[in-house]
Structure formats: structure tokens, C-alpha cells
Image (cartoon, rainbow, N blue to C red; front, side, top):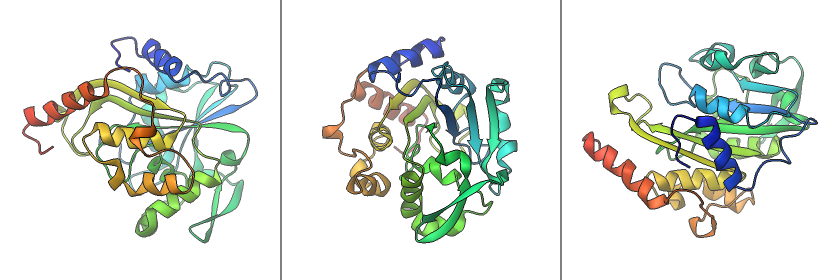
Length: 267
């Protein structure tokens, strides 16, 4: 779904295209919003206007928690300051690494303590950026749920860990890819950014990740994360079985390709 200046209205239109979220937007369920940000110095994270549009799509929710955990680039609290203009009595940041109330779950065969917020009747939103990363975006974003600062120990079996986290917390209720702009790499400078103004929004996070990867000119069949997720019954990874509505998929794909070529970046 393309948008101009009115990001909120555009996001509302995208929500309508997927059939609405009335079952998620209720006064009986708080919202957990997992914003993906590894390093604030890199711009590969959901923009403030897009995050605001997502939050305002849940006006009935009594509380919206913006959640993140510590990593070696900073604490979750520090990194969530990117979205501080959105903080209010209803919208609050929450550092998962500082929660003293936890639940023990089995992740990749080992016990892991996770924040109690993740296990109550709450809506879970995951948003990230449009990128060509083979591990994906919105599903891989759950790698930020474990509280430990050094998570690299889990890189050797990343897919197993992330999908176990996915199952442990009951999945992702709303997946959003922020295609406001595309950075050819996480460390790309601002002048390399490709303005795109596209949302990918869906209730099936596996399908959203697979579609985003294809939009970037890559083959979802070579994406281990979504293929394993499909085999485990967590979502759809086959583009032939995914209904894509809104703006023309191929037109957007060609615009991205042209942006790479204009900047003399390998596509």
C-alpha cells in the first residue's frame, strides 16, 4: 500500500485491505509492539510516523507496550528512545531484560526465562524494515525477546530458536514491514536510501516475510526461516498461495531494482 504525507490514513487503508483487525483492537487486550532495532546508529528500523500509524490503529487497547531487550549495542530502554515522542500514559516503553517476573520455557531444548508480558492475553505486533536479509524481518525480530545481552550464542541455530520463540508466545498477531525507504545494507548512508513508501501488512507473519523477500528480488524458497515455519504449520511461505492486494507487486519490485541500479549497487 503506497502512501503520501498522511501515513496514518494510508495504514488504515492497508488494514482494510486485509479485512480489518476488529478482533485485535478491543478494550480487553493490551498490545505488545515489538519494534526491531539492533543499532540506533543504523537507520534500519521502523520510522516514528509508521510506528505511530500502527499504534493509532489500536485506539481501544487499554495499554500499548513498546518492547525491546538489551543487546551489546545498548539497553532496550536506550534503544526505545528512538520512539520517545510516542510515549504517553497509554503507550509505554518496556525493557524485557528488566522484568523480574518471568516464565520458563523450552527454547531449542534449553530453559529460557522470558518476560511475563509475553504470556498473557495480549496482541503481539512485530514491525521491521524492508530488506534483503535471508533470515527475514518480522519473524526474526522475535530474536529480541530473550533478556540476555549477548545473544550471539544462539546464532548457530537461529531458525530453531526464533521459531521456538514464535510458538512459545503464541505467534505474531499483526506483521508490518515498513517500506518507507529501502537501505541496500544496514550500514548504508542516507544518500543511498531508496524512497519507496510501501507497507506490507498481514496477519500471517510467515507470508509477510516471504512476500517482502520476493519484493526485494530474492527467492523465498531459499529463505530457511520461512520454509521451516511453513513445515511447522506456522504460516504460508509459497507466493502462489499468498493473496497480495493493493498496489502492483511487480511495479514496486521494478522500482526497487531501478533504485539499486541508479546507485551502482549490486542487485
